[in-house]
Length: 191
Image (spheres, rainbow, N blue to C red):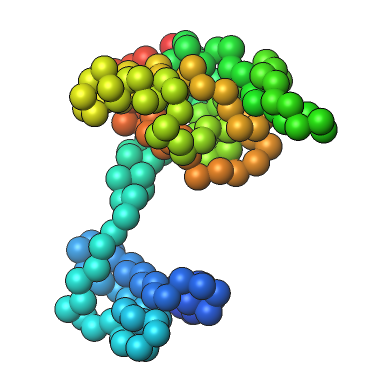
């Protein structure tokens, strides 16, 4: 197998603005390819060694999305399914728009949020923990917000843009565990 394209991709990442990147490909619990480029400390140009310890952020997104995508392969749902088929509070979303004169208005979303929008971070959600409904549910649960309650709270907030039209890092993958649980239990929009 030719891993040169993967090596070039890692090189491209580190030449851009990411100080270090690494990839490991395993088959049957055996490492068949490993490549790294970059520095542990970019300013001092300190290399990453085999025993380097580093933090991984947002790893749960990868794991929960992988589980959800495995359910997609099994036909539990379609990427085109509306989110509201599983979480009804998302049926009538609004979008916050800024008019030319600077005023902000709320308008009904032109199309529903789909499961695909969640995976691609194009649902229109923000990443604002200070949003009124999010703040309210955090206070009412002493900061221990169950995923289902978080989903209900987020549905009360207007979208930043029409679903599917732009990308924004947001809470979209927060739904993966909840939806995966429903799909595993056979709760499909197609059954």
